[in-house]
Length: 208
Image (cartoon, rainbow, N blue to C red; front, side, top):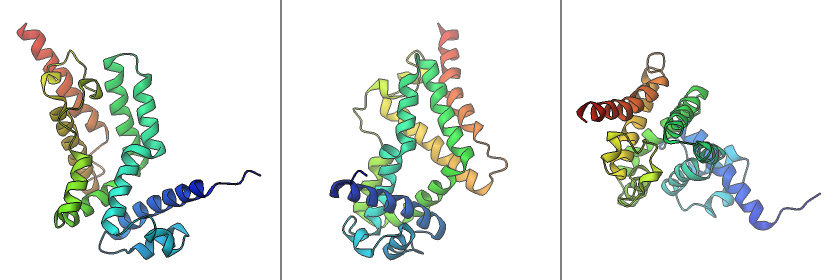
């Protein structure tokens, strides 16, 4: 039997804590749960929490970071985009992943956490700055990082602004779906994004 190293055990415990934190804060709210509750949910000691995270705010920021960059879902997302052979496939894949995640119910839990965290973070400059890193892309983000086809008129917008618009659609539909899941169908995300990309493309073609 292969023995795990200390670093591997620590990383495993950290992942357990991040996943437990998302569940517990999504269910109870940021104010309704403590770091001790997270430890209990993860099946770990209180020391395991406090050795990884100094406070609740940092823990939730790390949950967001994990979700967006390190989780299996995030890795699958990047791999799916990388398999696309052209701009249109990439855009369709981008929308398909969003829809699939929303249908699974996974996005609703994460959205509850994020929306409950926003007013909590806005009262703390450090947390506000940390959260802004996740929702606002750097101004020098490369154009090929965007899912928008290069020949779309939408692509004329600065890549950072493209991502801000896509984030607004993401957050807006996620919020509405929490209140009205029967009518706010996940497919609306595809409708919104493709409308921006393709309608502007068609307008450009007509002008030319």
